[in-house]
Length: 197
Image (tube, rainbow, N blue to C red; front, side):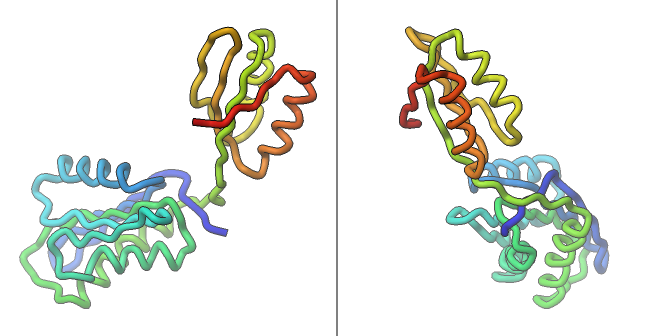
């Protein structure tokens, strides 16, 4: 079962005067990864390279950022794959120390920076989420909010108040059936399930 990480973890290596600052962190999509890489570039203006790899289904990516092709991004991505991770971003900021490492040395440095960070990372089972939307009388809004609070991994996404209250929320896929059944019973048929949009 694929796993993700609970929080960002950093590593730092010095190899032949070059400094490699690695980080692994949970990341759902490429847009988030690109924003994080842009933030790292701003934090490390003197860095020679900010290489990264994202393992996130169809949005996965491997970027060498000026290093010789295949010496940074792809090897970093392989480290994530070997650990059976999903929705994880690995970044390595390199400050060049003046000594060339050669292709093999670069591959080792980038994979080691990621592997060192992963050694300290706490992994969590990756939960698939489903999004639900329902309409209910105002009197039942508190009940639904309490059920969401009591369900681990559930998140309220959107609420609108009209004739009825409409709520959209996400929760782990494996808990959705029981959640809907509990609410239907407690609401005594006064909840309407809508298509999430």
